[in-house]
Image (cartoon, rainbow, N blue to C red; front, side, top):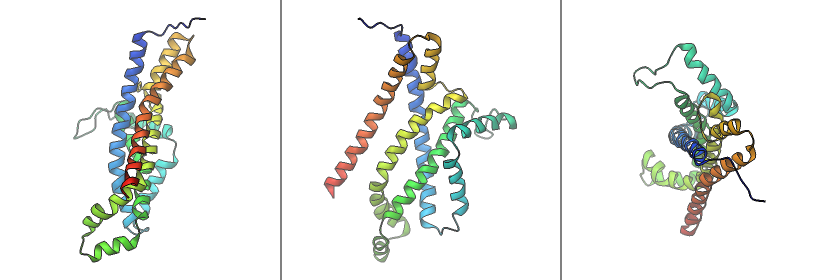
Length: 227
């Protein structure tokens, strides 16, 4: 029996556009979250626990509260304040803007723990030896700690990237038409091929995710060969 479908090239293009928004939000969230996560993680790893308790508490909130709730709350927060444009910078408050901000903060909370764990994994004897040779704190961190910690952090960071990409499916709740939302729109319009459309969306997710996981694996193997 020959397979036939009502999915048109325009429908596939619509899904591809949704995938583009998924990739863009993921990239922004990972860049912003990684930068903030490095700062937060280093602070939590190098300062006394009592001094970083407020920061740790705030990060725990972002990790503990479901992402969907965070998106809905922040999306409702700006209209309550009557803000449609961010003062000074002039950025318009759109669902896309809110998605990037919330996902960046959400990502930073997890990335901070990855960085903190990687920094603490470097033996203190190694760090003391570096300081005894006259290296400054900055030289110790950039030339000794970060290169060693990066090998510990990379697998978790790759996993976080893939997780954030799948979490972008939740931004459809506040109006961003990413990959999953675009597939839902097609399903609602066509009604008779939901499984086929979801299979296409799942395939696109796989095509996006597979190179990222393979790249992480290749870097791990290369570092092991150089040990």
